Image 1 (cartoon, rainbow, N blue to C red):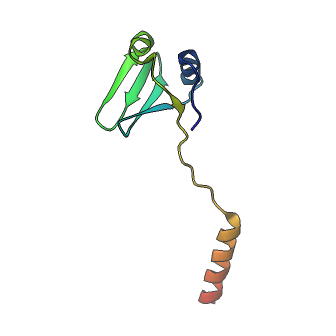
Image 2: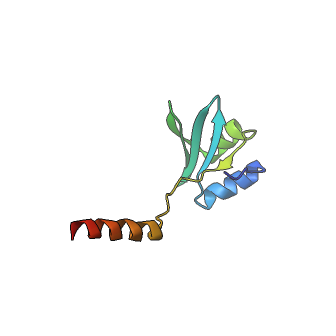
Image 3: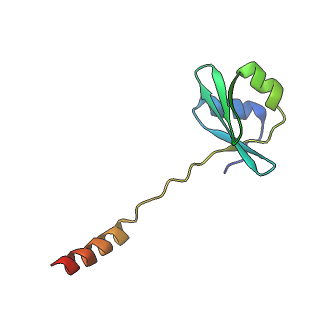
Length: 90
């Protein structure tokens, strides 16, 4: 995850459709811009804030760009698997 270096950069990242996150006490909280409000979601809470409210509450927070894990398909392994599977059914 890429660390955000300033609150202004965090707001810019949100406006560019990035999802941000922060960690507190082992809990992950995600932040996403939806329209003119920022959606905040975590394990125990989900709410929206105006940009002004967000700035007042989270100006000193350490944010990171949230990289969702997206598994990649290894086509070489796929080809090998299906080659063996087809061999056993013929």
